Image (cartoon, rainbow, N blue to C red; front, side, top):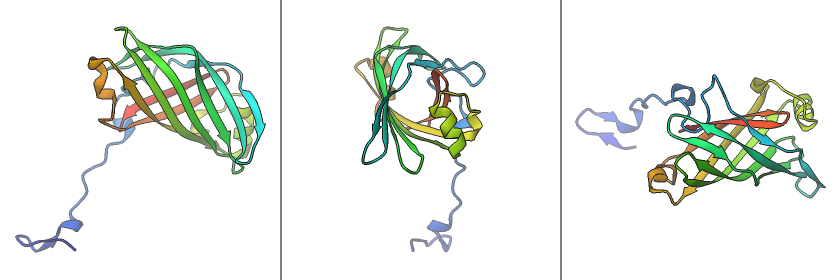
Amino acid sequence: MPHDRASGRSRLRQPCPKLRRPEDDPPCLPASNSSPKPADVAAPIILGPGLQGERRVVPILGGRIAGPRLEGEVLPGGTDHQLIRPDGVTEIVARYTLRLTDGALVHVVNSGLRHAAPEDMARLLRGEPVPPERVYFRTTPVFETAAPDHAWLQHRQVFLGYGERQPSAVIIRIHAA
């Protein structure tokens, strides 16, 4: 075990710095918690059961993003590919494009997990509303852009998204982790 000779204490026993929680910081991308702006989605295209579970594709119709560092729109044409596993967990990989107010384009790949009690997942899959506190929905978006002003989005920090599924829309509050 590494040892600090000057103090005689183990360096591994030093107290950890206080970890920041996402709720401590304002979201950097989507609207604030008081006025979220959802991305509109179409009805899912159900591909049916496969070896790993049921596959679905959800077309992304568009939407708005607003936050302290970015503002713009979610362009139509993106898709959210889902795998509903036999254990009830939904694996999500969404790919879409943002057009920011300065004209910059940002490619987004947003991967994550969503799960809830079986009765709540059944309601979600039928397109019925479920209170967001009853659903675990987290994502880790990755961004790519050619715009120098937005280079901070790329590979310099980790982002964490807190999602909420509504019957015809999705809200994801994204924080720098």
